[in-house]
Image 1 (cartoon, protein in one colour):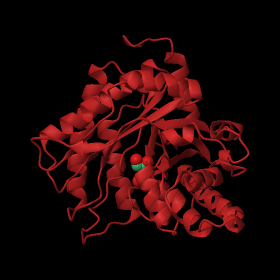
Image 2: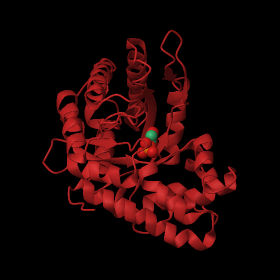
Image 3: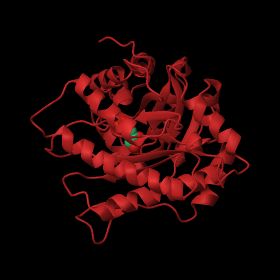
Image 4: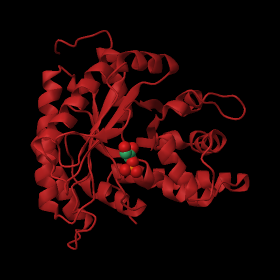
Amino acid sequence: ISVRAGSYTDELIKTAKAIASPGRGILAMDESNATCGKRLASIGLENNEVNRQAYRQLLCTTPGLGQYISGAILFEETLYQSTTDGKRFVDCLEEEDIVPGIKVDKGLVPLPGSNNESWCQGLDGLAQRSAEYYKQGARFAKWRTVISIPNGPSELAIQEAAWGLARYAGISQDNGLVPIVEPEVLLDGDHGIDRTLEVAEKVWNEVFYFLAKNNVIYEGILLKPSMVTPGAECKDKKPSEVIAEYTLRLLKRRVPPSVPGIMFLSGGQSEVEATLNLNAMNQNPNPWHVSFSYARALQNSVLKTWQGRPENVQEAKLALLARAKANSLAQLGKYSA
Ligand code: 13P
């Protein structure tokens, strides 16, 4: 297909297709220890390994989850962690036919010469880490970089974001991991929806330009875009139908049909909003699998229900299944509130 016809090509394409299967999407549970700490603090729990393990155990051992969830993105700690009974989380997921994935970026740092924007670290040693993650059972990867509309975005920040994503994607594919390409256009700001579309078009233009330059196999990647919405502080809110129309316009203009799956992030939308927007996008056929890779929009109710109490675990699992099922229906365009 390209000069990257490496030994993993067929497997990458198969993995990407399995994740982008009808009625299923991704559970993003790869919060870094710092972010996981914020989630635990919201229910009054201390941020320690025992509590993180208890929470991730709740998620990974929900029976029936695989009907709605095709992949789960893990933080490094979770990839090597087991249940309190000693069963590897990776094995719990595989039993449900859920592909384990791994967050491989090393987070954001200030980008010199920009408008107070950031760049994403993690390329050093990435090939070796990826090979080890593969051995541990991971079959896809995630690299999240961000673009801020209120801060510019500057040409420099966009180019750096796109180049980093493309370099990461190539390294992932060489090591058997399907890269999720995630330039998150942050929701923050009071700009209208047209401005979001303009920025998103520019970002995806650069991303695909550099993906091609790095000989990334499009059939073996997944995208994780932000939906095209008005800024969070914009007064002019838009209904799901309009958000769907703008977001699909972006995809049609920028994303080749060879890309198997578009797995949207929720980015701070409410659980119901994220489901309704996804459902609206799936009202008509499109060339891709348009689905979800939500963290907050799948986990908010789970955390609230759990409260860190063992006696609430069963009910919290049901809350997870309820959100997963709603988004599964939305992937099929069959959700009604
Ligand atoms: P949200 O769905 O909470 O935006 O998180 C998705 C994610 O993994 C961001 O990288």
